[in-house]
Length: 592
Image (cartoon, rainbow, N blue to C red; front, side, top):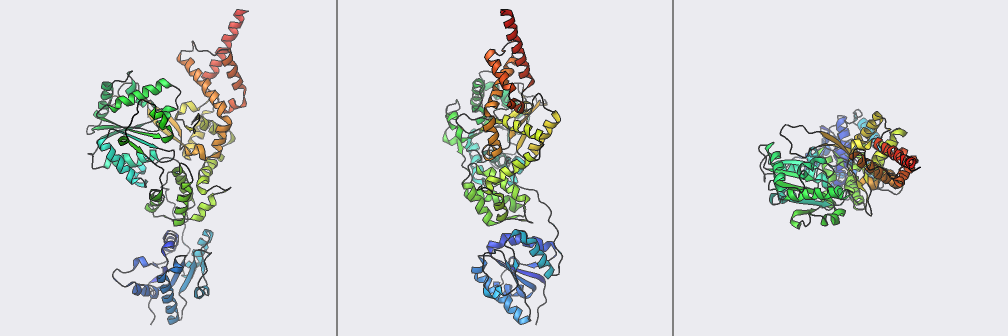
């Protein structure tokens, strides 16, 4: 007696095909209205053998997804036998083999059957269309695009807390540190994820932690180049009583708060400053803040600046106040790759996760490269499945897909600009690089106004900058300018816009930027030195500090070079050169 089919198809597969079946095949078939039966829906407490038999009998067809593990799985062989036997009993051919890996050899009894091939992702749409036609169903519609949960080169922010994974142990450790310590130094190599750990890990965890009451913290995040800390350095030398007053003023603006947390991100910026006096003032302010009972300090710094820190007034910092952050790897990296997609209902091929982890082991500062590769792969997603084959297509010229991903995005962003805009983009990037002396280059946090030149078309400059920001190569952040006094409760502080390269990985991993910095390093450093002299001249009211004959000759030689036209300069520098030339000629006339 023939059983009435209640499902269109029973799909049998091994666990190495689960991601593909759930992410691609089921999404496509269900979109076409195909009713699918899976082992996952078997009744609880019933022998599995009986459930397999019922699934075969109550489905029009049985689809065998042939993968390496399927061929050695005893249960899979049993399902084949059940389906083939049922076909003999009912004088039908219910079994459809689907070969997921075209390097596999089908068993002889399956090789006799007409099969579906899915070894190449380009075959998948046609394979699904043929299967739907066999089941008398229409082609499935195109899937709805999903927002990408990976940030690419940009650090995770507080709004990304639900998508930040892989650093759970470090977050718990940092919360425990801050229960008993008022200073925590987070040190790690570039690309280890320090900023993301703080923004998307620690800060949200502090707000929700049961160790602290609700609204306990007033959090302020700043960089050494931000002017925000001027409130604490207004008195020289910094005074603990004054610092305590500033902290109390911040707390008074939040009635339930009990503690201020100042997050000093990228402390290494301080050590790249030429102004040693500014360095000393900043360090002195941090030292004073360490003594304020209601202020906690969280400082993040790149590991290669450890010697500079140890030579500063902040040292010593005992081990109990230091968290040394190693690059993410192992289970943490696997979770950082897999879980954001999983939370969106997207499946990543297990072999792709393994490949990403293997490639990341060979790349310094690999985390942002992994995130950027996942952004590109998300755009190439096939329904709700991300395939290893698409990652392999990213690589070229001996580069891994990981190394290529960032360059692909950056070069595509640049190629979309006009030649004139590309010149502006080159100049912007060069001004955002702090050239290393005997060490790697770093990012240079720079006010937006300092990126313009006297000859810029304002609209063209704004369009170029926004394009680079929109494509996540640069970031913008607003910094409240302090006048050196504690902010009043209802005062509105003026705002400055600062620009930054999205991640230091661009400095080493983007060949175009590396070429720019190598070709234009000397000219850009000359420009900065001349601009610094122009700023000093302005600071003295343009009444002193003119260039002498040798300095003027250097400035005029530089201004005559093609590089000067590309790199640009300020109106103040041109006025300084003109004033210096006029003064030297006047002195020559007087001497004559």
